Amino acid sequence: MLDLLQNIGSEIESRCLVSKTKVDYFLLTITYEMATGGQTSSSQDAAIEDTTECVVRPCEPCVRNESSNDATVFCKECKELLCDECKKPHTIYRPGKHELVSILDMNTASVVAEMRGSDICEEHGMKIEFYCEDHDKLCCSTCVLMHRKFDHVYEIASVAEEKYQTLKKTLKIMESATDNIIADCKTSENKLNDWIANISKTIDKVDEMKHRINKLIDQKNNTAYIEASSFKAKELIRILTTQESFTNIKKEINRLSSMFISDHKTPVQMYLFAKQVEQSQKRIETSINEQVKRQIFSRTPVSYQAELSTLLENEKAIKNAIMNPLPVQTNEPAPSSSDDTSALFQELTLQQLVSMDIKQTEGDEREPFISGLDFMPDGRLIAVDNGNLKCLILNERLQLQGIPYKFKTFAHCVVCLSKYEFAVTVGNKTVCLLFVSPDNVISLITELNTTSLFASICCITRSNMVVSAIFDPRPVRMITVDGVESDFDCVEFPSKTYTFGESASTYVQCKNTLVLTDYHDNTVYMYDTVKGTSRGVTDENIQEPCGACVGPGGTVLVCSMKMNCIVHLTVDGDVIGTYPVDMMFPISLCMNSNGSILAVSNGCRSKRKLQLYKLSPAFKL
Image 1 (tube, one colour):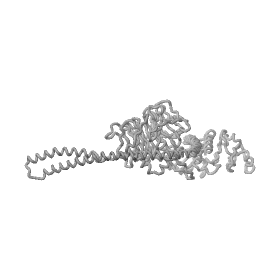
Image 2 (cartoon, one colour):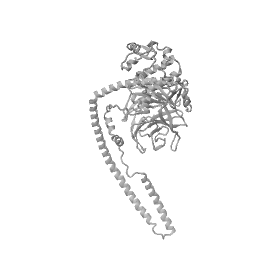
Image 3 (cartoon, rainbow, N blue to C red):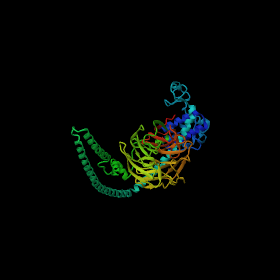
Image 4 (cartoon, rainbow, N blue to C red):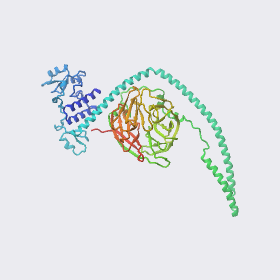
């Protein structure tokens, strides 16, 4: 595949340097698309006609014979590449005159200009000059008369140059991707060998963890039982006291009610009775209202119940938590996902689905500012309102679901950890782990106290998160759901610290790549956490980069705040595309689990928005 891409790329370069005709550019790029789409019908189609002197080409008869020899000559009559062994029988056994030229002299105009008839319309025998996008068909001047009623008929000369440049750029990305796949294969082989070598050690660790888990559960159960017994004794006293108090109140109500039995009272008597009842009534009403506000019985919450029940619902999750399983070999194609590398080669189109103007509502002390976003597996969107210290759950129409959760201080960013759990970074050196029920009730699981202020947050695994640190020489760190902090030992960060809004991070798990944006340097840094390599990516469209998230196929999507757009990058630093958004100063974004929906928020005062976009591959001419 890599050889095919290199050959096709060299073919396009050769055409540009020698013939200089835009029609040839376009026809060759159409041939390229057929090749990359798997539509080549023979080895001769795969072998490219022309070459430059720096490219080695295979002998075409040898390719058909499933062997491999380098071509040394080119037959101008048969348009065939030949090696030294094949050129002599070629002139003997094939009829006609054979003019052989050295492979190094193929760049002469008489050789390169020949298109083998690919520039002639098969139906009318005329030169191809147009392209109908509606039917994906190359047309001559006669064909175009039948296609003139369609809107998307283009003169090849007008679109060839742009097409050529686009495909040249795509070839570079594809070649880089194949290099990454080869490197990933070698890395995977090493990891597999390490896994096999350490299997017994891993099992011993699992047994040790099992013993510790059982011990912790037993201790927690004993503690919970003791606390529950103590709580029961106190609650029982309170309940009995309340019951006795209101039994006496009921007796008093019955006594007061008896005063109204007789209807033969004088007006003076009636007035005196009313005043007595009125005084008692106020006291009784006060007691009743106070008691209504209290619960007769409130049970002690068990903090680990929601987490355990969520884990136990999924037997597969327990097995994976104990030990990562080996991949199962299969000839079936892998299911598509957001990590599917086939999506890497295509630009995207963003179709706006929903747009919501973010306005201050009743109870808001400040203008809302959505500083963090993430999708839950079921499609619900979690949004963090930094301005009003809130966390909201929204549906696919961006409608509020349930009651927002209120934090004690400013919240910054959010990441979904599982089906019902998520984490939020807040301003007092804390990470909050929260639980949201299917009916959108948010409750706090625990608070993790940290050594630094954290802003952006994303996942490496379900239990390990990546956070960007504020006022810390280590701008990106890791933290587990147990609150254990650690650093990226193989990564060398810029020798500077960031404050809020000056950087953000994300992690591309399938590429082992850490991403860090630098707002003031207009740079996106890519760090390979396995190899320890790094690169700083700059581009005219990367201006004041801020929020970032993982895109389709292990790519990266970055908010370019100053340019009001989203920049699409590979982890190697190639710019795949730039996508304008209908808002000023985009600042935060996230993609759903299947890579079909993108949520974006902005930071423009009085014009703040939250929008959903449909992601789909861009149609290419």
